[in-house]
Image (cartoon, rainbow, N blue to C red; front, side, top):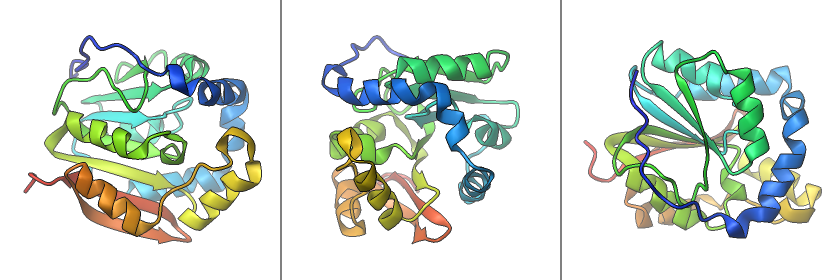
Length: 217
């Protein structure tokens, strides 16, 4: 199994307390929100993502570890899945669910400022989290920093962008203005982070964007 590529790094998520509080409150019931249809949609989306065995994967905003069973299928008893979330409650529920699994590690961390070594991660998955990042460009640049030269950065949702943005607007409150930017904006953000688009879909099967470092082959 791969070692955890963690470095000493201060957590700087003091400006994210409201979001942390929101997700802490939802942690006890988080798994119950996922329908069979959504879980199938997750599996379908991840089947389009090529993650080699023995990869180190970071699951950004992992919640209670919804993606873990699907990511384990990719690494096939090798590699490591690092589950990260701003919410201590989400992390605790996830750790309890997968306490007997030696291929997962759990980390309370700010997606904008990760305590992870440069170029040490093979895949970064942002599932249902990107709209909640306060500074999306900063987070993307940070993710590019830790991504290996031939690694992939994945942004995905089980619904199309329009539905995700409408859902957050209807929820209101702290998440009311949390959106997935339009494609033109996202492409510009990728460029600023020195990432290049490899795959994009935004339709009834969900939202999926795969990018890689500009230096990759």
